[in-house]
Length: 302
Image 1 (tube, rainbow, N blue to C red):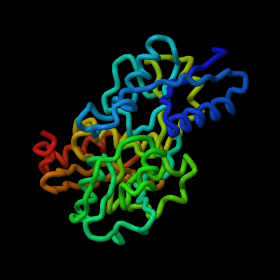
Image 2 (cartoon, rainbow, N blue to C red):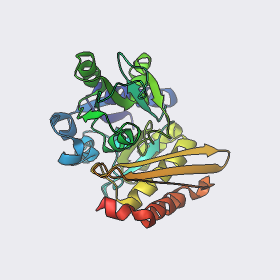
Image 3 (cartoon, helix red, strand yellow):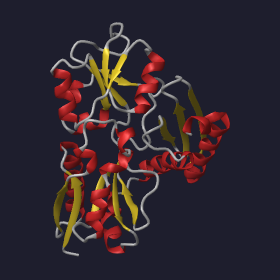
């Protein structure tokens, strides 16, 4: 293969991720010509409704998959938190790269933390996961929908539409906005989304030539962690319409996985944690989901 084409969305963060993958591939394969194929997805076009109401985060990757099937691209680069637990039969995840900061970020021009916000402050986010956890900390807050790419969301904050907004630390760091992070929100306050902070490469199934090219980019530890989180999400059949969180850490050969299912209307939050050997990462994810279901998650998920 002399040329590799990367399908990517046109948003600044998506382009950063694609360029990042391109640079890694160029380092390992200096003779390979690498091109970006920039595409617009439905998730980028429909900005006036929460994702939970229009089809979920899968709206960010469908057009990229169509492009790969049509031969317009060889791989697609995604934020792993945007990749649904079910991948179409024609595709597979070929590589998961080293994870960036996985936590949520509190961003404000006037306040330093969630605790500093005045009563009934306006906070922007469209994530059901963040909403249910924010309400648990500060039930007085007025939480408003916030869609668009990172730059658009920051501009809305700067225009005075919100007192604060909640974004992912990873996206802010990657786009050079680390100084906008006033508070890195702990996992105890806001458990991250499944796969948050990790970049993944989707390929056509059994494309051994491409698999060989991207193999050097695989980060083993991140792969164990994200696979555990995604196994939990798959068992729960979780999408955008229900607040689900999953986050894992590894210490030596031991993986610890925390999971959460919430109900925005009632404020009920179910949370549990499991741990075991990294070789059992996906089994542990399934076990954690089963425990949450035993605690009543299925009723919430319905």
